[in-house]
Structures are given as structure tokens and as C-alpha cells.
Image (cartoon, rainbow, N blue to C red; front, side, top):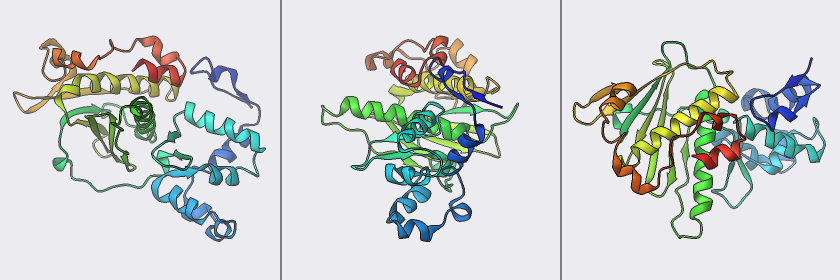
Amino acid sequence: LLIHLTSTAILKDIVVIKPQWLINALGKVICDGNLHIDKYEFKHVGLQEDLKTTFEKGLASRDFLEYVWKGECELEQVDFFLDLMQRTMLLSKWIFSKNELYLIPSLLEDYLVEKETIKGRRCVIDFSNNFLPIGVFQRLLCLCVAHSVRGNENESDHNELIMEPSLHKNYATIEFEPGFKVHLLQDEEAQTITIFVRNDEFAGKCLRIVQAMLRKVNHDVMGSGLNWEIYLDDVVADELRSLREAQEENASPWFSCRENKHNVKTSVTPAAENIDLAGFLDSL
């Protein structure tokens, strides 16, 4: 038995001839810390705070990852695991700290939030005609954070840095660029993911970015097996309307010329789903 990843050109170059080795390594990180982690061991080696940050905030340090993987691989193979987890959207770089940290969304904790208290225009992604698999929302968070990180790097010379994301297993607040803030909420019972856009001027751009990210997750990770419908806030009627209806009526703010002043790129081409993660993020 072997594992051959084929979703992008770079992943096609990876063939794992010992799948259990890969599973064991990932299981050292993506696990229930209360059941599978010896806290006294990490305290003994001076990684108690790293352990706490990993399983309370979903942020793993390089030192923590090197330690948990030391029995599974050589030190030089740590970069392989980090790269693989980034390409499969299990992990994202975290630059909002002086330390070298990596976000692992599957380790985040749930957050109780009332949907009615969240401000912004709603973009509802409805999976209820099929189902919303575990891990889709977390991979969407990975892509959103990766996009935010690139935006922060681009703005670093302009004294207008992007806010640090606030992340939970089912809810997040992320700023893609200055003034472009979104909230993401997963509702397991309703089988939906809702994006709340705080600024109407970025609504159209947000819609295209989210659509592209969903296609990327679907193509690269889910075997193109996801099915969803999109519903958008109708500003006039104060209700949700289908994406098709909103497109046909050029509904504001989702389909408005105002977004042009933000240098919005044309919609992501289908080929973007087949390219490497860095190239995909550049295309957004």
C-alpha cells in the first residue's frame, strides 16, 4: 500500500510508500491532548508552555513539532511534514508573533456565539442537500489565514498592518487587508458556513475569494465530492436570496461597481484549482 497525492503538480511528486509512518506522524499533532499527550513529559523537557499554546490556541511552535516528530523522522524531515500539512490545508504559518508558530485549526476549541449578534452582510454556504464533512471549515480557516498572512506581508512597509485573527473551531474573525474584515461561522446542525462581511465595499471581492477557496478545498482535499448552494443578503428585502437571483439582478453590494476601486481581480479561473497553494493565493 502506498499514498500518491495528485491534486496539484507539486503534490504529484510525493509518493509515500509507508502510509502508517505518515499517519503516525500526523497523529502526533492532530490528536486529543487530554488523551494522547503526557503533560509531565513536556514539562520535563521545558515545553510546557508550548504544549499549552498548541492545545489551547491551536498554535504550535517549531520546537514543539520537532519534539513530537523526533521519533517518527529525522530532523531534516520536519520541513517535509510542515510543507505537506500546508499544501493539504491542515496547517498555516502564523506571523502574528515574534516566535515561529504554525496554526493547526483542528486543535482549536469551540466558541459559543449568538449568530444574531454578528454584524455584517451574510454569505451563507449551505451544504444541507448533501452534508458538511468534518475538516472543511478548518481548511477554509487555513486558507483564510494564509491569505491574511500574505496581506500582512504586503502591507508591512505601509504602517497599516492587518489585525491578528481571532480563531475558534467553529467561529473566526479575520482581516484580509486593512478594512476588509470578515467573520466565519460554522453551524453543524444546519450544515452551513456563514461569512459575514463588515464593509459593503468588499462584499463582491469576499464572495469571489470564498468561492475560489471552497473550490480549492473541494478539488485538492475532498475529491470534488462537496456540493453546496450559496445564499446572499438582500439589502432591500432584508432576506437571503440565491446566488443565481443575486447575479441576475446585479444585487448590491455583492455585484456592484464600487468594488472596482479596490483593484479586484477578475474571478479566479478553474485552472487555479490545479495550481500550487502559493500560486493559488497569489491569484486571489
